[in-house]
Length: 168
Image (cartoon, rainbow, N blue to C red; front, side, top):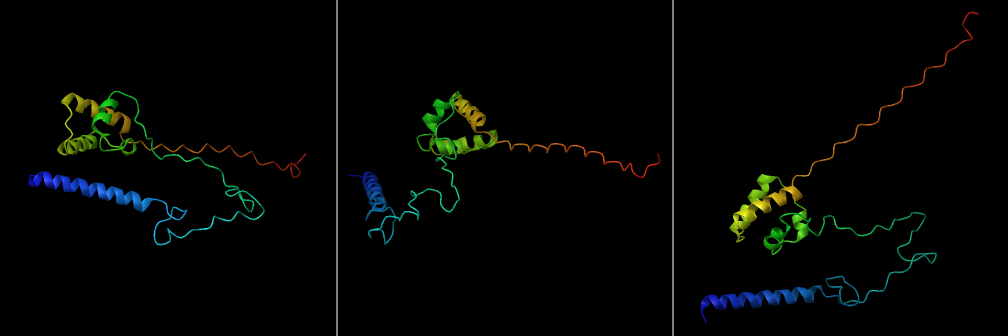
């Protein structure tokens, strides 16, 4: 076996062993999901709040609104010309959420595309132009909202006149 092939096999084995160890280390132990030295110790369930209220319910008169979990950024790409190229060239290494977090101008996207080409991405010139246009259109610079001017104050009503001192 050639030294190059042997090195590739050893690297693959090390990667598989690392993935297996990571899965083992993150597996729940002892009925809880905490890691570390206490992970194997059985933890008692949390006690319900006083008054028989359900766990997570409002206590002491303070209501906590139930807010559904929401991703900070979309996990899907906008449907537009160029999406298929992004899916082909970008999603092989990056998540859609990583791409949607970006807010770059044309120059910055051009620099990013140049770096990706150095790392092995090889789109055709037409694909590259379409890709850059899609990225700038969908993930270009974010414009900060212009703060609204406060509404004008109503004019103060005229002061009442004192008619008692006026001559008749």
